Amino acid sequence: MLKLLSVVTAVIVWGLLSLTLPPEIFPGPIETTRALWAEIAGGQVETDLAMTMLRVVAGLVLALMLGVPVGIVMGLNRRAEAFLDVWVMIGLTVPSLCYAIMAFIWFGLNEGAAIIAIAVTAAPSITINIWEGVKNIDTRLVAMARVFEASRAAIVRRVLLPQILPYVMASARFGLGIIWKITVLVELIGRPNGVGFKLFYWYQLADMRQVLAWTLLFTIIMVLIELLILKPIERRLFAWRPQVAV
Amino acid sequence: MNSVIEVASLRKTFKGRDGTSRAVLTDLNLAVSAGEFLCILGPSGCGKSTLLNVLAGLDNVYDGRVNLNGGRVGYLFQEPRLLPWLTADENLDFALDSCRVPPSRWSDLKSRYLAMTGLSEYRDYYPHQISGGMAQRLALVRSLCVEPGILLMDEPFSGLDEITARRIRSDLLAIWRETRKTIVFVTHNAYEACFLADRILVMSDGAFRQEMRVPIARPRNYDDLAIFEFSRDVIKAFGDEIGNAAVPSVPPVTETSLVDDLDRHAATRMNI
Image 1: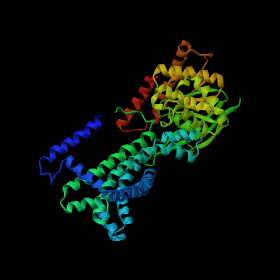
Image 2: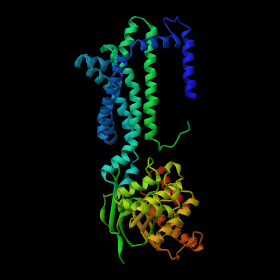
Image 3: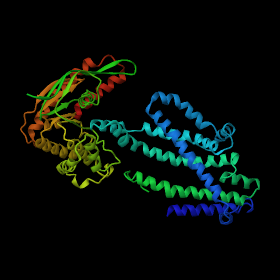
Image 4: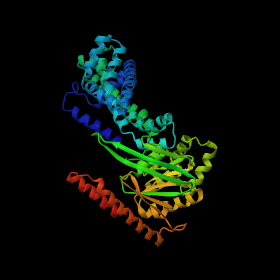
């Protein structure tokens, strides 16, 4: 209920703010929705949206594949932590635009380069999350499992993984947020389609209705992914957790 | 007499970060016979948990000889250490599975010990949904249902309120009477030791200082005056030992740590 109210308030604030500028510069929610609807009805969005989604998902998978193992190694091993610490900090500091430019120049203007740029940008944040998670592992539970003669494999699977899983989930959500933004940027500079390409196209034509329509479109998609996919997965995985007052 | 636990000349030293080493266990000898209830009584930091970790096989770095031949070793920690993502029932399954108890026996074992501790109704609860006392009782069930011959207990009731702790102590004695497991119970609470044990070993600075047999008949009543009187003797011995041992063990030190040590000893005396 409160969530609905918050969405309604956001739309009203948008509407009021849009009144301060002419509609062709800052269109309100009604005009934007109308423009978006026309685009959808005209069959203009599927290809670009699908391409963006593909890059987001591929980028996320690759970023997790890079970030999770490095985070685990850093959490488990002091030497690895000392050695990789600086790398992670550098990785985090370099702007995503630099990764995108390097990837396109070195690997060519293709999907692979785009996905590599996306993944490399997001991976350090994921690593930091997992690293924290591994350091927070409760070793007293490991001692308990050893007293009960649990095998090494059983300790990893039944005592360690359940403790790391919340951090992997958090990184995936967190990573997704970052990856959307990078993907749009990467599309803007190096791809012939996708939401980012469309945004740049309409920006060059100075058509703010279309720019906001596309922004609205992928905001809605993002929220739907969060509510319909990530939240239910999390609820199922972490049903055991104490309910914090909602 | 047949001993199920035999420890001879056990020594253990911890190396500090600055390279200095500190003896935690100094030349311990110990024999525990089958079915005995032994309490090791000592202040915090005296090495009693370290000894228990060695007995449990959690710590393999030591000098001397340690021999356990009383079957599987169960261990009850100071905290319940339940897996929070598993229900009470699943926590027991985890232990049974880890110890490779045949699945056909799980149901009987669980029902038996859950009933003994009054937890039968709580099988489907997660650890955060039950009280601290119930969680510790569940941990007791977990350590019992894998049918250990030897049960090691590390101040298992010190984190509980007194009323809850009393009830679990009585439960424990009832279970012990029925199953006759060998129990090594570590505590800093002299009254608890007198209520539970056949024999008390007073420990300080990594060595046993005194051995006392508890001359009180079983079944015991927690409010029995005899327990109170005997605990007074134990506390006296306990206090003297700490006082004596403290002098040589405190080398010339800076003022702050001297105060800390004095406080620790004063606190130990008052606590018991």
